[in-house]
Length: 413
Image 1: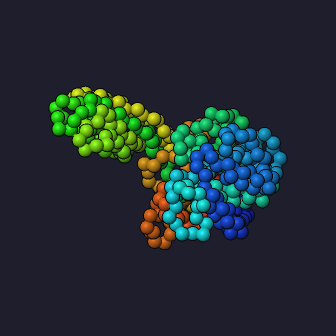
Image 2: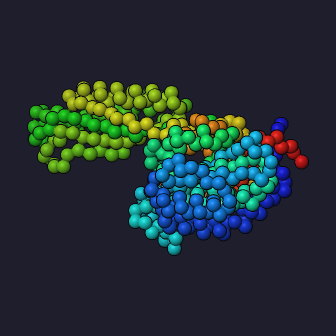
């Protein structure tokens, strides 16, 4: 059986450098956490990352988007354009959430918070850049660092980066990214091959009728009644159209219509989300949703319309990169700290990179010894264990070095 290879001396350096950098990276993470910025408005964060990478001697790439940074760490070895390249990605944006934590580094921006851990991701990748820059002369290839804006807001930052020519300017043979997962204990990671995170589609319903006096409903076409039946009808699609062996979620999350107790309105709007783990099922459910909305509404004498805004595609981890990385991390962290991940119905625009380049998305444990109230992603009390910053640097450093050694044909000691 083939075992991945990182020279023992480099493995020691990864551990030592991650430990030495940890206090600095904690400070950087707290600074970013205190100054969160919403999607595609990450100007301060972009400037901070750019200045830090320039100080490390990295080559800053073109401004593919208005915010975000792409930078290249070139190996000190000979080889020029023949050297292999690996890409590492972090997302840098925050969420419109009012923070409820009491830390002295809590958000100073009203209604904005790093409630999904992107401050952790950014700081980890900055630390990884510092760690690998200090090992430049021993790198068997080049490392591309992608600090991406706008992951939290469709269409996301990944797809526009690709469309702007990221993989035309740079040609990595693999890309790796990670995300905080509070249900996994800090110090551990989880990996999974194939479909790991769902495709996410936004659903916008409009039900139109003819409003009138609530005392005479027989004289109107009631869109409230139509909306209620539509909510019930679309729920059955998952249980009666989708195989129980195929994950899918349809949730109606908002209903708006009318403003008086004695007036039946002429229109009701609703919104929700659909999550699927395959593109085939995604297409099937989109078609069935449209038909259900139109036909249920028609049967009740109103008109129903559904607008579907397609979000991120299914995130599919490449089997080759994932199997390889699993062995690399087992070798470095120990088998007990590398878990098998389960698919989740949340979505991630890292999926867009994986449609163009093989790679693996890693679940990074940020949970403490015991569960804490509200310590979930997108919670106003999300509070990751900062020891995970060190693990994150080790994981990303191992991913880069392991893949470059493999690509360069390194042999075991």
